[in-house]
Image 1: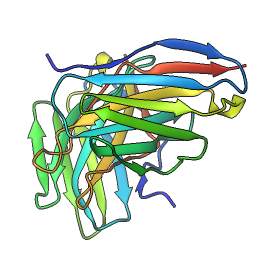
Image 2: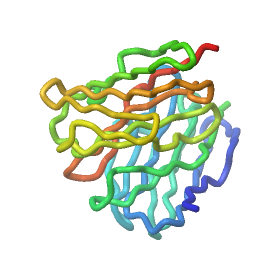
Image 3: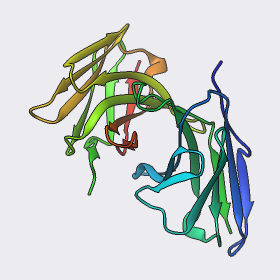
Image 4: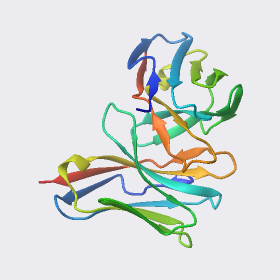
Length: 114
Length: 112
């Protein structure tokens, strides 16, 4: 059974803290993604990685960075958390060009910044 | 500027009838279009996809239609069931870099 696992379901952090959200996939997928979901805004792409150590900015990268040192792991970093980063964060992975674009999602991390 | 648009935030359909969810896109560089279903507090799950070279794909109760000239796709669910109540996201994959772009979603309510 394919799996994308996010390290936390719920997280509460203070303004200014450095926050790490971890994601691991066991499908040997090339591509990994970080999205955030907010009411009325849908899923917005923060960062995307198509290979180890490779990354591309999505639509809303400001305030975030990412790390992909190993193929199976993709980390999202909030350098200095702010209240407007309170959101549901979703990690996903996909096979790559040979596939049909299907992305598999983790269960999400609900981050609250206070 | 939104590349994938779902203009209906919500839709209510009687159980047993057809649900039709719509999606428009602006970029001709998408090679696959996908539909996802999402329940609260869970990650989205894949429903069905269609290649940009096709105009129809069917999987059980779910059919996706693609009209390239209108840059429009739709998801048909027949017959609608109570478990279909969820948020449905339309998504598209860029053919140059595999990036997947999502719409804002449509909340589907199936009425008893």
